Length: 173
Image 1 (tube, one colour):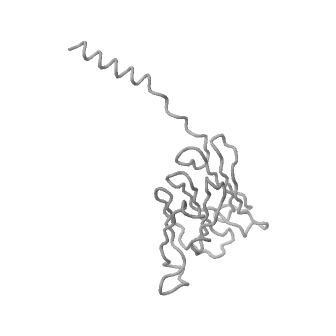
Image 2 (cartoon, helix red, strand yellow; image 1 turned 45 degrees about the vertical axis):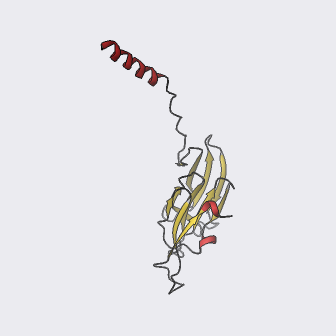
Image 3 (cartoon, helix red, strand yellow; image 1 turned 90 degrees about the vertical axis):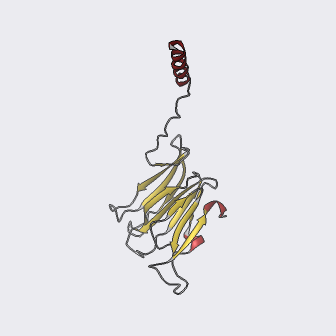
């Protein structure tokens, strides 16, 4: 019986010793993508502190090399955009973020953008959905983004209630 117990322990220890080490964590000082291949960094590039700052979004690869960048800095420093909320889609193909005006203009409008890994480009989600009026978008698997846009069936100008739009980013051109 003792021999069988020792054999089982030795087998278990041997299995643990031969397991490959876990992959190294990416050196991302921003928000790593779920697969660890990319990192999104939000930089403050304006002349004022938050919440009136202006932002730049940098996408870096695992080697921390810049692969894409989008600046929201304005010439005067008070008419750009500041990134507020960010999220990667669970499939790691898109980085979604919304912005507010650094000068306080149109406080109801949360211009929302996304970075496409495949296209290596930034695109404005509002161009597809219409004006997004709520800052708390939801990201769901695999690449769905739920946003509220301006208008209701009874009032197309409504900027308080809005209408829910579900967007599958992978289906967009």
